[in-house]
Amino acid sequence: MDEQCRNCPALCETRTQVVHGYGDVGADFLFVGERPSRAADESGVPLVARDSAAESGTEVDTGADADTADDLRRILERLALCDATSPADQPELENVYLTTLTRCRHPERPPTAEEIDTCEPYLNAEIRMINPEILVPIGDRALSVLGTDYTTTPADELVLPDAHATTIRGRGFELVPMEAPRDRTPAQTQTWIEHFADLMASDYRQTKGRQKR
Image (tube, rainbow, N blue to C red; front, side, top):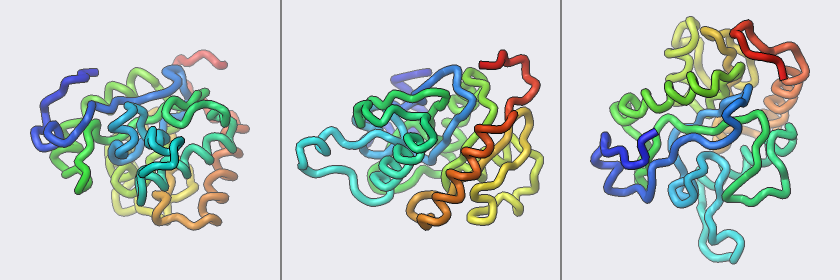
């Protein structure tokens, strides 16, 4: 994983660092968001990191990025996949790995399709390394990319909110899509947690040579 990647010149000018994946490298569950948040750009931890200023009460991440961090952290804690006492910028994760479609952040816009394509080898390398059982795409863009690359389901059937809290058979994986926090109701969050908890309690492991935990 190249920490000095220069493949997307526009993003190189705005990032603090390249944000690769984070978590348990032997995880069964791999969550994929769209891009690093401002806090992730600062800390190097995707999806759940909060701004270091949060503890002091000064300016912190706001908007969709902050919503995603708080929301996903609470979900992981409820599923016993994250230690609730661990630091905000260095969460202790068990059986879960977090990553994003792109590795660098532009503060004023989402990544372009070309930038997502350029970062795809990093995502593919992480998926091959982790070899998870379940992929969790968060939001429409992550679902579109993972659904296209890792399932045989027609693209027009891979849409949110219809696919939210469902299980989609993939090529050696299963996908459990999650609606993005900014578009999701509390009831939808509860539905997803219940669906995922049921899946965790089931015999979800595929026949891929993985030793059972």
